[in-house]
Amino acid sequence: MACAGAAMILAACGSDGAEQPVERPVEDLYNSAMNSLLEEDYGEAAGAFDEVERQHPYSVWATKAQLMAGYAFYQDDEYDQAVIAAERFIQLHPGHQDTAYAQYLIGLCYYEQISDVGRDQKNTQLALDAFEKVVQQFPNTVYARDAQLKIDLAEDHLAGKEMEVGRTYQSLEFYVAAINRFRTVIERHQTTSHVPEALHRLTESYLALGVVGEAQATAAVLGHNYPGSAWYADSYALLKERELEPRLSESSWLSRIF
Image (cartoon, rainbow, N blue to C red):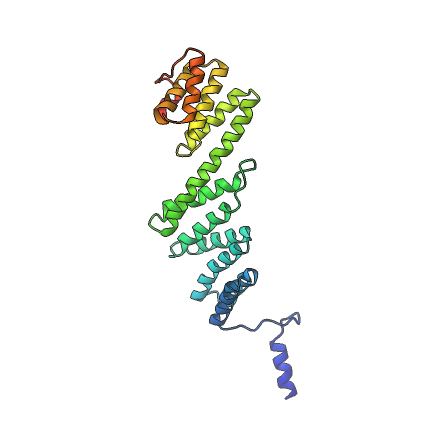
């Protein structure tokens, strides 16, 4: 009996004498992880889902656990870990039915870290890139519809950042630098709410530099596309002060866009 007891102790230990965890049935592990998730113990849940894969790497539950671990990390605001888990899921299971959600989850992780326009917008761009993949690769999913809404908001945020920098340059009379920022809004973020103001600021900046033709063309584009806006009224008033009129020009760079 003593020999049998010794044998059991040795079997439970590794070569370094440390006790090894006893392998549990995969259903038990997965259900335990889900219970932790439902109890909002997200850190515990993430670790438990990882344990499912560690103990049963070839089980169908392991595949589910990989993505659920990412979701648990996301709920715990551990965004970097969530992105790593979701990206790994996509790499291992590119054709899986839940790959669309994994890509969407990556976008959410970056989207929820978007900062105000006064700060760096790296996360905004990363969110935009991730959501665009959802729309392009999984267009007929519910995730694509929500991703498109978030794309629009991210685009508006990026345009807002460009406007803030452009207005700063303009206030410092760095008009060429300001023009470049306002052009970026028009060229890259045409569907955002910032375009009318960007056109007006361009009109102001061109007039300040004495580039009258571009100022007239910009005001004309503003009036044609946003005739009832206060920004057009301001641009029109600026031109009138100089006895000028809005005038379209085929030689203007704006003619390629509008």
